[in-house]
Length: 365
Image (cartoon, rainbow, N blue to C red; front, side, top):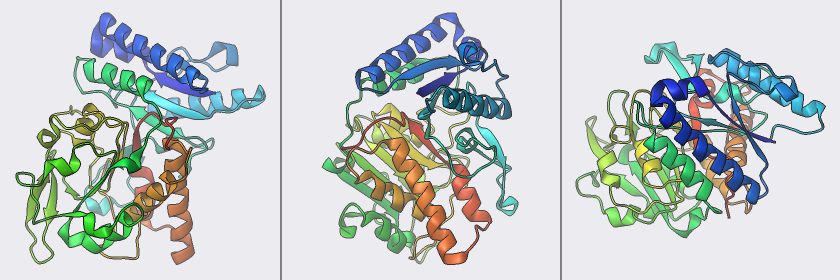
């Protein structure tokens, strides 16, 4: 059984009764669309639980939600079923991120917001027992983006990411990015910034892309992603939300290694590239909510390993977005332990900070 979970009270508080009904109607449409493709799903409100399964209501707090999801998994197990996936509906103002303690407190991040702890049976495990995805909306009292993205997920057929691939990286990380990008395309096709800039790069290269890989700089205070020359410390603007306007990204899989690439708290599609990609039709966005660690050159580590193994997993016909994301996390852990026998602080933060925005049950061909 696949669970779709949201907060009915917070939907009403942010969007009013009419807006909440629009979101709930779109969610029911998603349940029906999933059923039509053989993915049985159930829509639940955190505040109501699942009385027929013996799962009580919960407070809309991270720890309470994590316990409720684990109880749902156990209840399904008792009935000879299993929790196949979890989809959270709404941004962190509707279903809060789990704010994990920052393993690298010296880097300035107060904590690590994410959905990692909504995936394991045992609290605080770094690897999930089921895929977790989130369909976010824009911050504020307008449900339009959330409804749009849920409706889009309901209408999505199988994803075909390899029909057109776009890669974009900061020049200083050229070697590391090329090693990852080589999983899916010729490294010489990877755009670099500089010389490419937001004001000058060929948008036709991005238009129609169905797989987007970016390894650019991100900063906590602003939406652009940045490039950097190998011999210059200054950052140059490489990509902005406005640069996606009018592009066809329907059904695209977007993977970003940018610091704060998946930061959406208090933001909308005009000031968060993750939301801008989704609003432009992307089926999913994978990125980090906090500082993203990785080496400047091979061998791959931390975020590079997540990206490399996610791209590799996508090449398995019939996989799902959620399964590919789990494979990426599991393989990152395996490779890291094989090399250094333990996870250091930035390895732990990588596993905590990467999230999947989109429906984890969507199939990749």
